[in-house]
Amino acid sequence: MTGTGIEWLRPAWLWGFLPLLLMMVVWFRQRSGTTAWESVVDPALQPYVIEGVAPASRKAPLWLFAGWALSLLLLAGPVWQQRELPVFEAEQAEVIVFDLSRSMRADDLAPDRLTRARFKLIDLLRRSDGRQTALVAFAERPYVISPLTDDARTIEAFVPSLQPEIMPAQGSRPDLAIARAVQLFEQAEVAAGHVILITDATITERDLEAARLARRAGHRLSVLAVGTAAGSPLRGADGQFLQHSDGAIVVPQLDFGSLSALAEAGGGTAARLSTSGVDLDMIENARQQAAVSADGNEAVAQRIYWVEYSPWFLWILVVLLLSAFRRGIVS
Image (cartoon, rainbow, N blue to C red):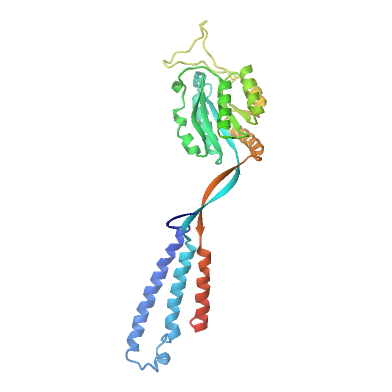
């Protein structure tokens, strides 16, 4: 347990002191007028000829003001101590693997695949619901942009900088990226994680084997496919169409069938990137399936709570009220 300065859990109740002060000012002004008559009227006759001069009536407003003030203070929830309590929560964690190969510059999706994929990445992060999330970018090699964290906004800040030009070397190795995601789970001791692969890659046998290994390790792999089957010619940084060694123009085409096979090997779901939100719903269903797998794996986290003693002080109000009745101040 740690001690701090006084904080207020419900500070809005402190505004109640404004009408209290106003009523006190009005009462004291009326009281000052009554006091002037008390100086000239015989004390024995004052209770009969001066309204509100009885001893009990004099004290009643003061008791009411004191009770009101104390009630406001208690309702505002003053706290000055914190306590750490263990909380058991399921280890729900996911690694989002983002493809930064040059083919993501294809513009068969307007304005291009990369821009649309980054928007979807932001949507996924905003739907993370506090689960542990990591971000890995890959081309020829995978690179960890952010390790597992429950602060999705921090990861979101990196999204605008995701572009193929930041990769040291170009290529497309989803298998290495999947293996890197599994390593992140192992380092964090996550027994049942979820990998979301955002890519336009054409899948090979080594990629399928990486997905199977991830599934055997207890994790799931889902795929968000970016692009169209028709594809579009790919331009270089100079604006010219890229060509193969034989002179043919490079046209990256999406092979959704191979990506579906990859997701099936990883025990997850494959969805095409769309504008309707169906893709996000499919990924969300896969997240829920992964969460069910993680239910048996709980981690102990420490949460800090304010210790509130205000309810105990309510007895003071009860004692004051009973005393007021006994003395005839309140009837």
